[in-house]
Image 1: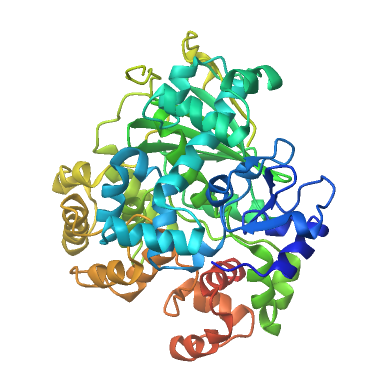
Image 2: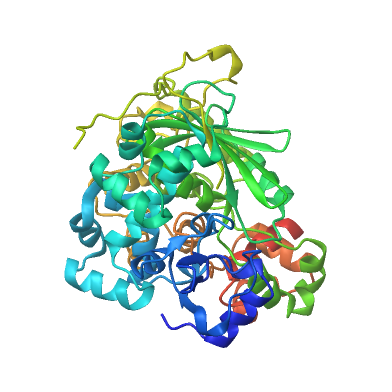
Length: 505
């Protein structure tokens, strides 16, 4: 990916935080790389190089700035817009696929050879998939080192490294000091919450309309899975290595996230899914700028800047919700889903455990070797059931017409056998095509899944009743065909227009 030097340098000179995560500034005279908003003195032009990723800067032999912490910047918003192979690869790497399945597993998920995938990522990101995953491991390791009492071996394997030696070498290379020195420099900051509890900050690009996010999630919250109250959203998580819970509290400049994990290896994917859920990597100025260009939406954008697109931590969950919500109210859909959940066994509460191994944002973690004081925690929440678990529910547990019940079972079978990929790394067009091929799934359901599960920012739901009511409230065309044609001016952010129309309704 080519970066325009003059535009990037102006962003650095003005310390514009809107560009954090878009690119990274390498300073050859000091050997460090920074985020554009770094408060340090602006480097001379002749000493500056720009990189499309932290991994590319690290590959050039630069270490991360300890002042602005560029590795903790928001992610690039371009991966939300782009549905190509590179965008899909970046979303999968963030979710920890390389740590779990290696480069062969990543390439297989994308349907390309390892060599071709490496070539594409090098061309766009300046680094291959292994280097990109390594940069993510280094960030996870740094935050654990600096603020916890975990042993270095435990941190190494929790962060995804294959050995302690690899962990030591990477930390030295990326941060310029051994792990022990990072811990000494920052000291340890304990966080309340008991064993396996991690508290960290999730950065975003302002503005963020937190009330709109919480209102949307509260209206659809499922008992036993989600809770919203006192400005905090809590939910259970089903993660690659075990169960988890998260509490997310939007504040000025960041979202405070408290995670309880059964397995520390799930830290990176849990963080990626929480960021995705709250749409924290979006570029709100670009989105609002496009939508405000329509006089019909300009007033709403000015009154409520930074509206985000609530997404999902689980693609199957969102698809099932969409089917249940066909032609019924949100309240009715929630009642039906609650009944379905009541026919599933409640999984055990996440219990932290050490990672098995052989030795060869600001974040705080309570040492998981400490005793866990259960009364300090709210009632445990479960992750949404898997496709296999839903297939085991008896007919009476669905509480819906036979046709809709069989549609859910058809969806669950397709997800369980791998013929349908509903995760963010899936091919959006192919996923929508396969959804439409399932009996009982039409354009509205497929569009809703594309918008919220796959993160497509450019989906319009012109037949949706609430969308049409919102359009009428804003003096926009309410007829589906007319609205569909009118909405071309909102591209590529029609999904965000849908959220605003829902609020107007």
